[in-house]
Image (cartoon, rainbow, N blue to C red; front, side):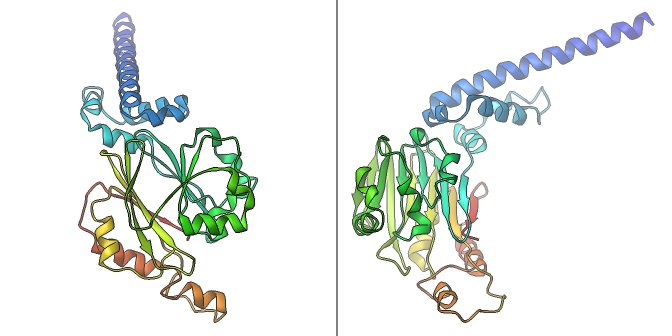
Length: 287
């Protein structure tokens, strides 16, 4: 009986030591990743610590320290995945964190759904084109925000006509096809074929990860392949299924045209053409 109690005490002691190890590793990892990627300071701290702790617990305690040896970009990707605020055929808004910036891509949101984001924590909003399913949330975004709204000039001007209140926001424009910088982050752009004024794809490169956001285009070529080849994270649309019967309405035919949207099958073919990359993340949207 005494031996049994002694064994139970040893097991409890080991367990407590393991918990201490996990707690120290978690605290050190959180501290290190926050220093490496300040944008994570805008993520709920409790969520961040819980996320890291859960990942650590998937390892044997003797291997747990290996987590600290992972590249910081790998840890960053693990604790800061791309988040969709909206992802339907009728609205889209994606949140992407870089090392230093908390970004939204497109802002097709209603007055209710914009409440799912903390607008004061958003550094940049990148807008691809002027269709309302990509920019309607501008009507409800706080006007006293420090957020920078990024679009090519033709898109910005078209948005001003549809949503006059958007003129009160802070804008940065660019010429499609040109590269520019926001703080320490390089932003690359290419034009996309779509039935709008001027659609654009974005690639963020913060010297840690390359993230591509490329939506609303009905066909692709080598230019789009080259643009995505080195990317670590890609958001691409997969709007409809080619195997389903076509409803021959003008809207349906437009969506399936070369200047409309990409099908699931075409999106898959596009991904297959990319140079293989084992840790690449692919996100399908507008589906």
